[in-house]
Image (tube, rainbow, N blue to C red; front, side, top):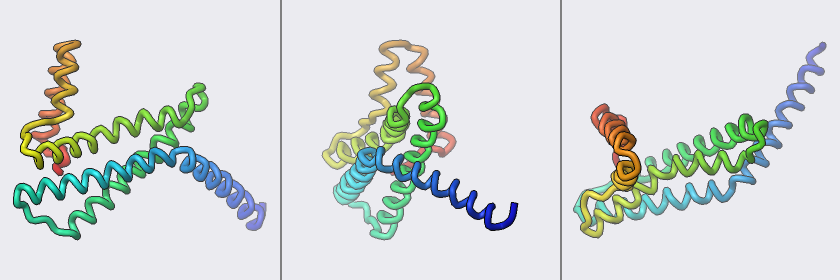
Length: 164
């Protein structure tokens, strides 16, 4: 096999994956829009919350965090799409279903941040979607609720929690 044949094979494989990635992104366009909307809503309520509490914010830091969140969500989205194509499709599950489930889990953190910023800017302190989910889990099964509560406490204690 000479260099031209290797180049042709590499180009064919690259173009095949490029077309698959284009289709994947097109199929997930509404999830991408959801991520963008969630990020900007969180930015809006975060800035509003900081103004209400008199916290000075810098445009450069807000811009950097917004772009970083977008990149993070696009990484989650690509991971979810490839996971759906690699595992879901052979099992007969549509890749968009798997991508949607993964993105719902990823977006819950952003929704929690939006709700907290909104409530704090309106004077409602100590409201969290996580606490609400834990209380629902405790209502169904006390051990499950306690396990979730301990897991979240450990994350905060170890500094793994992203603070907005």
